[in-house]
Every structure is written in C-alpha cells, then in structure tokens.
Image (cartoon, rainbow, N blue to C red):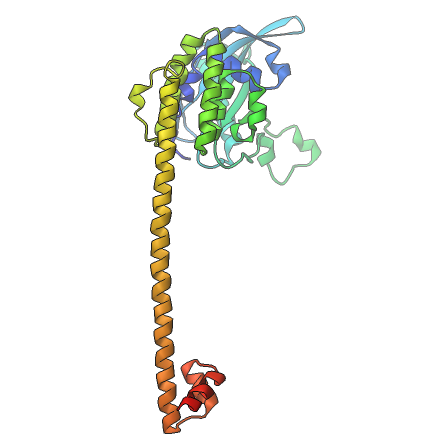
Length: 329
C-alpha cells in the first residue's frame, strides 16, 4: 500500500468545526440530525496493526447521538485516503482497523465486554484522480456468493464513502461551508483559472464564518501545504492569511499561471522545431534515395540489363517512372 503523504487534512479534522462541516455537508442528513456536535471529543491516535504491519494515521472522534429517547456515544472513525489509486482491499482494512480500535477501547478500559462495544460510523474520505470503485462492504468480497442460509454467518461491515472528485462545482456551491470550499480548491487544482475562482469562494466562506480568525489560520496552513504539493512557483512565506493576503495570493497565482503558459509555449516551440528538423531529415533521405534509385535505373537501362518491370522492382520506382527515364535516355 502506498505510504500516507501529508495532505494537511489530518490537521483540519483535528478541529471539531471541520468534523461537523463534514458530517452536515457530506453525510446522510438522517445521521447528522441525530448528533449533538457540542459533545464532539477527539480520540485520535496511532495504532499498530499486526495484519498489515504498518502504522496508519486516522482521525477518531466521539459524539453523543439521540434517538427514540436514548442518548448514546457514537464513534466517528475517519480514514483519509489520498492514494494514487483505489485500494480494492479497503473493506478488509476497515474490518481490521475497527477490530484493533475496539481492542484499544477494551485495553484502555473505555468500555468492557459487560458494558458492550459502542456503535461506530466509518468514513473513508478519498481524493484521487481515479473514481472510487472498490467494494464498500466486506461481504462484497466474499465470492462466490454463499447460499442464503450461510449469508447471516458472513462478515458484514460497511463504510461511508466521500469521494471528493464526484462532486460538481454546483453541488459544492450548494454546501455553504468552508470545508466545501477546501474540497473545491482540491478538485480545481489542475486548472489555474478554476483554482483562482475556488480560492476566491473559499475566502468568502471564511469571512462569513463566525470563527473566521481561527478558520483563516487553519485553512491558510492547509492551502500552503497544498500548493507545495502542487509544486507551485509561489513565495509562500508571504502568505500568512487568506483573508488579509488574498490580493497578494491572487497575484501570485496569476504570475504562476503566466509562467506555466509561457513555459508551455516555449516547450511547444521546441517540440515543433525538433519535429520540423526530423521531418526535414526524413524528406532529405527520401529525396536522396529517389535520386540514387533514378541513377541506378539509368545505368541499368543504358546497359540493357533488365526490363522495365524488373528495374521498377529493384529501384522502388513505378513502371511509368522507369519508362520516362528510358525515354530520356
């Protein structure tokens, strides 16, 4: 499995407002309506998984949920998945991670077998170029499908998928939160004009938020990390606040776009020159070969060595061209 690289999302989701924005904006509404977000509590940590023999990073929160007069603690298990390609073993990984997490709760006496294991909501947040197509429940990996009387005895564990790339700009615009602006910047990063528009919207969303000073600091750090991952040719030391430095950032993004366009034109001209030189050489070789063939044909016509068809076959000329040379001779 590819190593986790620093996207800055782990820091964002270490703060309750972004967890709330993720659930309210991107999870099913019936789930979000059960949660008391004022009770969010961070339980994040690192866990050694013996099956995969690796340390993985995740974000774990608990929140109180209310339904049918009952209040219970629910754990939100968020796995940030920014690999280059889709991992088809994700259901197996999630099954193992959850087992390790429950073992951790028992070991640290957060709960006990007598009190029972708390419910858990698994969320995979994915942002790769390839759209997600892996199974979302471990039972989908059991093949062939067992007969009905065995179905109840198979493992069942489903995660909720948030695939950023599946959201259109219109869908993200309808979700009025700074996190939707962050997702839009991620998706627009391949197009410099779209990137600038997404950053502008993100700044407006931050300014409209009651916690704008705090969000500005967090998202500015995230954006600087993101631009470094894009190898942006920008002096990021100048950018300390998206809100206060938005004009400077816009100027830097435009300068970066202009440099890329200029470099693209120069590269296109270089490729064009190389292609032109190669075509010229190939054309010269063809002309040289034709002249050699014509000289050979004249010699053989003069000597009467071969008939027209034989000369055409040897030299690569047409019979009509050989007849024309014979007439000139």
